[in-house]
Amino acid sequence: MKIFIDTNIFLDVILDRAYVEESTSILNSCSQKLFDGYVADITLLNIDYIAAKQSKDIRAFLQILNKTFYVVGADNSVYDKAFKIKNNDLEDTVQYVCASMIECSVIVSNDKNFYKGEIEVLTSLEFVEKYIR
Image (cartoon, rainbow, N blue to C red; front, side, top):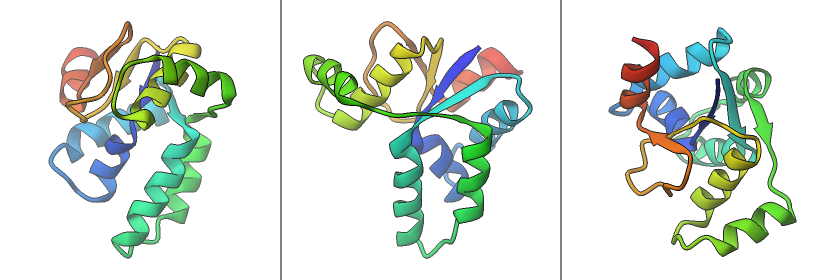
C-alpha cells in the first residue's frame, strides 16, 4: 500500500513529541517495506530547517529518509492543481496533490487541519490502530 507521510510525522520522532511512538512505528513499517512510503521533496528541506532551529544535526537521518522513502517533487502542474483547491495551507495542498498524482491510499498527518479530499487522511495513532496493530 502506498502511504504519503506529512512532515509532522517525522518531526514527532525527531523532536520527541506526543505521537513519537506511533510515528516511529509507521516509519519503521516503511523501512521494513510493509508499506511504500512517499514524501514531498519539501519535507526533507522543512525537517532540516526546523531541526537546525533546535540545534540538531540530522543530516544522517535525512540520508536514511532519502534511501527509505520515495521523494515526490512538485512541478508546475502540481501547483496548477493545488491553486484550484480551496484550502488556506498551500504546503498541505501541494502534498495532497502529490499524493493524489501517485495514487496513494492514505495520507498520514497529525495536522488536524490537513486538507481532506478523496484520499483518506489519518493521524499516526489512527493509522497504527487501523493498519499496524
